[in-house]
Image (cartoon, rainbow, N blue to C red; front, top):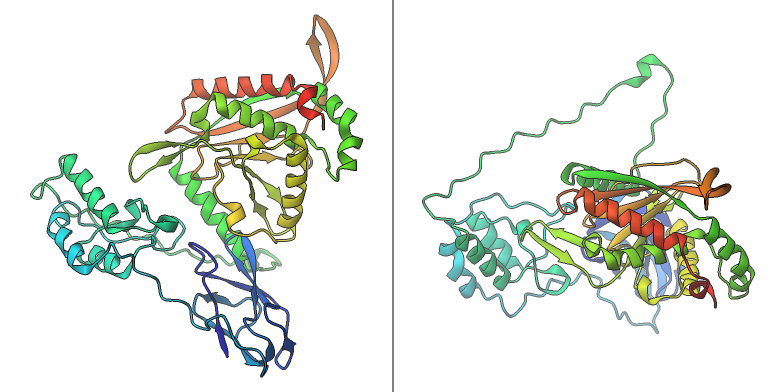
Length: 430
């Protein structure tokens, strides 16, 4: 039985072979991991669909492969029958998208927009049926500008029709429309020979490092970043932590500063919902989210990974401590799934355990803001007309200036500081 690389998730069409667990001739059980594939920021195990003997391995460590690539063959045991197809399933075309109906809107679309089709920011084409893609190619329609309403963001015919009607309502006229000027070709990167000045060592960028590089470049070049700085006094919060630390440990939880910050962030987001929003660039709409899924930046040996803890507003401090401990550990082991790194509404990057003071974190697009927390230090502070020794933590709030103004940011960080500094014992009790 030949086994090919299946689709690992929406937008996950390729990856790099990171580990091969077996060799040719080994006996494997059904669902036993055969190899691991590093895709974007996740590592996924590829299991054997049947029990049997590995007869051939077609890939090796470091190979970059795509969906449908033949990865290994397995001779099935006589008493085991395969229950997973060896070929990737063909995409299902929604019933809404008959070709005859698609042709109906081609004349209307042609004068409105003539553009070269492009890919999404992730580098993969937006999800759509073959008939929709064919129509888009014929009329020069850029599908990446259309927001899909189908499962997984799939673009339906109704989405195309609505997009064209919206353009027409904005005054797009057939005679006034003109093909966009061809973009200047991007200069090819030039490799430099640094060895002429001394000894060097070269290491190929990992799939994760490439993903981080592309994501950061996209965010920095498309979002006007502004950073609001402040400090917060966490002396009282640390006293609460010290008081309840053992009680939390008995419940299997490590009570750190981050869960306190998460709860304070959510309360602040409720007061300032624009910070929990996203900008839909295709429709030019601000999307306000009524859920609070916080991304937590985790420093790993391979690079920075941002898993998401969902429904933070519905979790107690104890539940957050346990969830944070679990997902951070699995992230460092590269065991988080792609799904666990999607859907965040706001990100926290806490560098306090490493060191450093103020810094300017880069927004995790499509979010509109991120909070950077530096390392605290004991400082002499005037409190109640007396000089006291207090633990002061530096903060940096980066925000998307297309959506958020400076006044909003100042009010947000002021309220956050107030909420964290007045954290109640009632919120910490188990």
